[in-house]
Image (cartoon, rainbow, N blue to C red):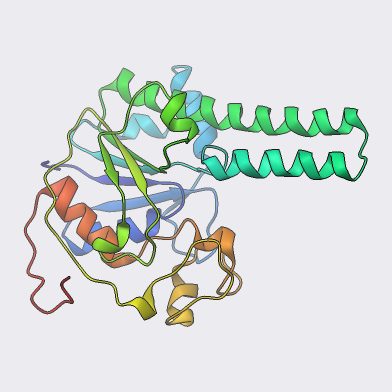
Length: 258
């Protein structure tokens, strides 16, 4: 894929990808409503911008051209199958504790409404991009029972089943939807030693916790599961960019190859 313009990185993890794009010589910016590390280029409510863009009003999308690329790490907490599991477990626990049935259904409706809220935002983001003929890659976690598998309107063009092969800390399967562009053929293989791997969902972590903390957006201490779940390592970001976006061969002779 040729990028003649700028790279616009949306939502969480955007800073990690932005920095790797810049190292590769691209003009890149990240956008998020949070700025916990003081490094976000544009502190902006992307959901509000999506709504304005979808309604045909002035929005951040007006400054993005067809030569640019959007990489969107859309918030995933309500789409993954763990959200459904937690919802079911919570209502079962409430029933065992004798919680009023009206409160239980209020809880279930709230969870359903929140997922629908995020679904609508993602759907409208796709719409704005297609209306304007822009290029975008959207990332989201992937499991066979995911909401984005059975209820999403299109299939991902790429599923990375084990991110550790490209230098990440996690195995966590991840899907990528390409809009108005196609993934390149990847070939980077970087081995991550066992002591530097992380198990999503476990509070006790291995490896360099100080380094882990630095990459955990919004984390107050290393080992917070909700923060760790969304992280990607700089090595993974670089390898993904080179493999699937640029189709760029790398010199990995000084790395740890599997």
